[in-house]
Length: 144
Image 1 (spheres, rainbow, N blue to C red):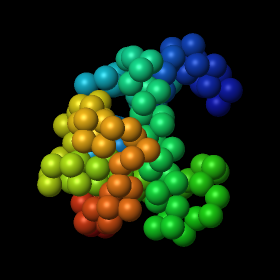
Image 2 (spheres, rainbow, N blue to C red; image 1 turned 90 degrees about the vertical axis):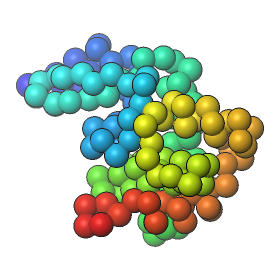
Image 3 (cartoon, one colour; image 1 turned 45 degrees about the vertical axis):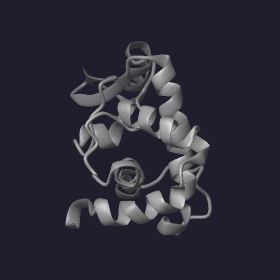
């Protein structure tokens, strides 16, 4: 299947692509709202609810901004290389979990966001500098 046909199939099947797809696919986190889908020998992750998808997209944007300095990037609007995106996704979510509960295991991203909202009131109010620092401790990547 060529890339344009793949993208058309993907758009027809996945209404809400998971913003933390890399983290879910590599199993560094889990989410009760995610669904794995196979298209043309590729595995993708879809979010099952619009509300969760919207909230995760917002969190992903906050994490990308927060990790800019740590990644040595000034423009975080461009796509990141795979390893850096995994650092943002896996490290960011594990860092939030660690700041929130002193544990880096993220068993359910949706529940983590619920807990974050109870603790800090809004995603914008999460202490992202602490999260980035905790991420360095929690997420070691491929060589860690």
